[in-house]
Image (tube, rainbow, N blue to C red; front, side, top):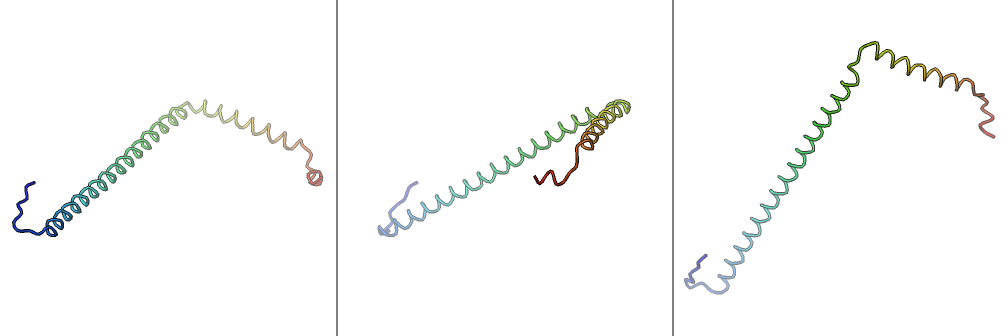
Length: 103
């Protein structure tokens, strides 16, 4: 940058230099702000992509677990129902004395 002193006073030169420094600082701040916004946007996009990938993986996994024949599904249901029945029988076999709980 070349500046020719065309009869400018020291105060005028200092003012011009100060203004150029201020403009440069402002440009740096704007650049940093835009860079940070872009970085945040990229991180959000990456998180969304990761969520979509995870959701697709879970969906495939769920489908894989639920694509068995209906007889296999019924067998699983019967096994779960047997467990529920056992738990109910155990609960009913226990004495239900509300006063015993207070002692």
